[in-house]
Image (cartoon, rainbow, N blue to C red):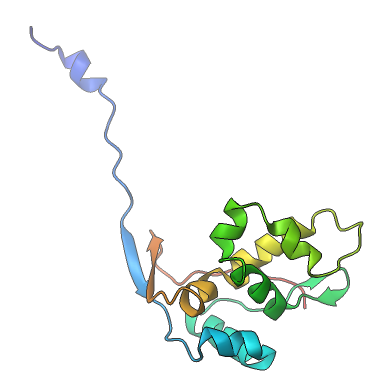
Length: 149
């Protein structure tokens, strides 16, 4: 049996995965235990981390107050990190630690969003001790959305 040219032309082309590149994370400037113990050490290292990654760093405002990023980091990492918190659906627990008003229906979503943009890679370095990360088809460092300060 021979194949016709129509058969050859109608074949679905194979999709090739985009190239991925590994980029080194900045070296940690403190150990996890010191970050948990000192909000000042945490904030200093977080600011330096974002500067080294060339990502925008602005503390978000939630319900009229600056979000306590130290508390958010501690609440998530003491539960095993963001992937575990998501997998075990524990964002409500994290939200309760902040004492947001009962009208704050989307607080869990916003905490997760801010964690992803401001703390995800920081967690990888300072909690999981990662040395590099993979970006796909990126020719420049990642840039996170802006927040109001």
